Length: 340
Length: 49
Image (cartoon, rainbow over all chains, first blue to last red; front, top):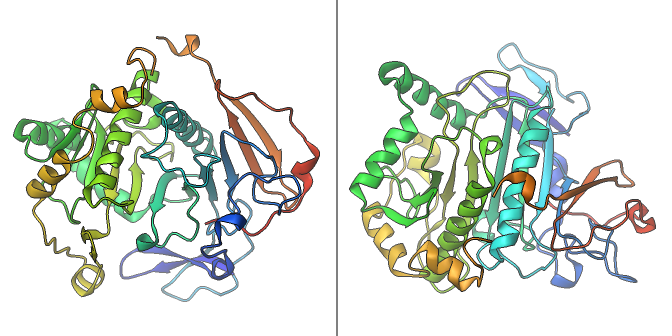
């Protein structure tokens, strides 16, 4: 059963998707459904015995392009809609043990091209108002399959956090004539204390208002509304800064660092969104090597985050570990900067 | 370097037995395979989400 139920108090949609209870949960590596199929082996999600990067429609989707009618009737206060949309899985690599931090720069750059292609193609579908690209990494954030992959939800509406962000950006633009994100980024670069890694075109930093310990933003310095505006050079620099940041994350506690990574960019609802500034946000669930940050009473019930750390100190910790610069990331990858 | 000078990816769309769409993206570092190989018709094990 799957449908959209309206939450009249928060004024947002809730997706019910009861079929997802049956999805595969942490299978042994030999039975990973995201690895290539091998001759004589069990058939995985990918029929071929080799692949580069693969995208497929999720077998257990929260949203479907042609969903069944809702199984429940609306109430006087709570409209119900079919769970219309598209859910895709993006396989970053055929290698089960791979991770974004460990991949060659060229593969990450190729992944950026795939993200861009999915944003453009899904966004051209009239039913899709927002293309939401994300990755959950690690069991601490609920991962059920360890094979390196991300997901895409093509929503029939603009999701509420993005909508709040856009509303603030519109207000700021109306008052000042400038992009809120550009202004915030200028403040961060001028201050410098929360910058983690800076490339030619992209920069990674902990925002002044970080809610999670080690919460990090990764954004283009120039005003880009969406991945559709990326140049090849942007994708190159994104790959290097992204890889460097994730290497730092993994070096921080000397173990794979769990995170939720999301991309915020312009909606595909047919409207003009000049105030929207593409960026990635990372929400790590750890507040120290062995202690998790939970969304407990104050966060889950009041919507107010309590951060037990200072963004300035967390940024300094991240600067001290892993690659010292983007140049070091490129050098370590053994790629000529002109050809990476 | 201009976009047109760079090797583009090859995008190969196949339909899985249950009707879902699967897209292979092949880049210059790998050899694109011919579409419609027989094993594409096999049903798969439960997968991701």
